[in-house]
Length: 410
Picture 1 (cartoon, rainbow, N blue to C red):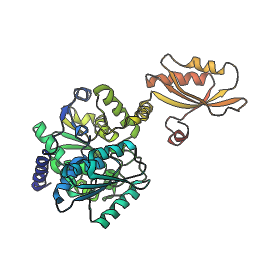
Picture 2: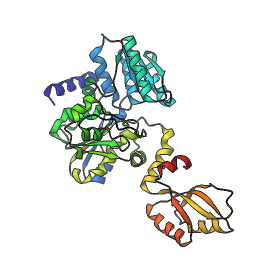
Picture 3: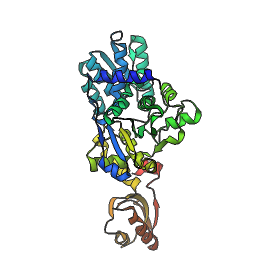
Picture 4: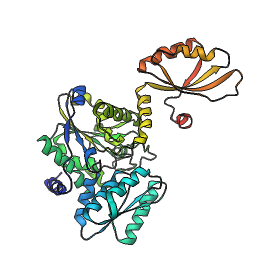
C-alpha cells in the first residue's frame, strides 16, 4: 500500500489516543512454548468496547463531523457498540438498527455505551431487513451510514491495530494471523504492512467469504452461512475490502470448524483466564494449522474481541467436548428384558460418565431406542467401550456428528 495510507493510519492512531489507550500487545508463554515460537496476542478484547470496532467507527465519524451530526448503523453486535461509544464521545446522535431477535445483553450494552446520544430500533427478524430499514432511514433523514467494514475510512481506522503492533513490538513481526469476516480488520492490517511479513487469514468454516471471493476473483455471496462465529460470519466480503486483499495467496487463507474454535475458547478461559468470543479465538486456534511455518518466528495473533455472553458457555463447552472426542451421543437399541440395562452399565469404564439417558420409544415390546450421551476423560476410551458393545450384541448408531439429527434430539 502507498505511503499515503500508512501516514493516514498513523494520524488516525494518534487521534485515537485522545479517546482510548492502545490495546496491549502481550507475549503468551503458554502458546509460545506449545508451538515453539515467539507468540504475542494483540488484545482487542481489552478495548473500551471489548473489540476493535470502535477504531473504524471513530475514524469514519471524525472525517465528516461537523457536516454530519446523525449517524446510522445496522448491527447486532460489536459494530453497534463501537458506533454507540463514539456517538457518546462526539456528542452526536446515533440511530442503531438491530434485529428483533438480538439478545437483550447486546441491546443493553449498546444503550449503555451510547447513553442519551443513541436510539436503538429493533427491526426485522433477519439482518437483511434490518439493514434495509437502516438505509431507508438514512435516505429519508439525510443521515450518515456507517458501514461495519466496506468503507475506506473504516479500513484506515482498523489499520491502527497494525500501527500499534509495530510501535509496541518495535518492528514488523514475522507472521500475523488475522480473523476475517467482512474484511475491515484484515484489509486494514494487510494494507499497512503489505508484503513485509507473512500472513494467515482465518475464516469460520461456515462463512468462507474471502476464500470464495479469491476463487471467483470478486466478492460472492456464500450463503447460507453458519452464524455461530457471529463476529466473523459474513456472507459476502466488502467490495473495498476485497480490493485490498485480492492479491492474497489462497494458500494463506484457511477455515476452521465452528466446534473446533470452541476448544480454544475453553482453553484460553481455563488456562489463561482470557474471555474471547468465537471470532476472537479464530487466530489462536489457527496456530495449529501453521505450526510448521512459524517455529522460531515472532507471530502476532489478533484477538479481535471478547464480547462473550456467558449464557452461551454450556453450548461452547458441549461443542468443544464433541469436537475433541471426549463426548459422544448414541442411539442405542436396548433389549426390553430384565438385566439388559445392568449389562450395558457394566460395559462402562471407570472414567466413563453417562451425561444423557432418554428412552425415545417407550412402547416398544422387544427393543427400546435410547438416546445416550457418554462423557470420558480421553477420546481413546471410546475404542474399548464400543468394542465391548459389539461383543455384547448391542446395536447402536453414533449421532455425535450428525448435525441434522442433533438439531432434534440433542
